[in-house]
Amino acid sequence: MANTRKQTKKKVDNEAAVLEKVAAMPEPYRAMGERLHELILESAPELEARPWYGMPGYAKGSGPVLCFFRVDDYMTFGLTEKASFELEDGAPDQLMECAWFFTSLDDATEAKLAAIVGKAVR
Image (cartoon, rainbow, N blue to C red; front, side, top):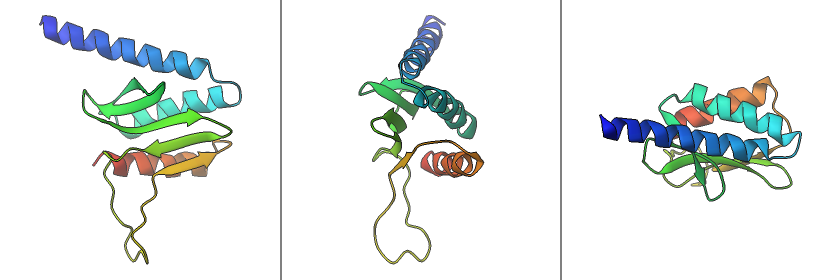
């Protein structure tokens, strides 16, 4: 029971730290970060937020971080080497996408990000 409470507290503390990091982002990235945080957790409810190298990261429990986002000159969403990768059917090369830049979130971008997260957690 104590271990469960400790895990729950850690999960809550980690999420609070991620939300604090997002709140510190300059606009318009703060709003995008808030939406991206929601989108990741909606797309893969088994993921938990936690700080990862000073940025928001998402992992299955205490497992390795699978995806993250950060702000540089643009908003960056990325997958770590621990995410589930596969070549697209008919791919002419061996390259697999692992990071994307964007400057706004529209419906099409949100749908693409949700699909990426869904594939990453398989």
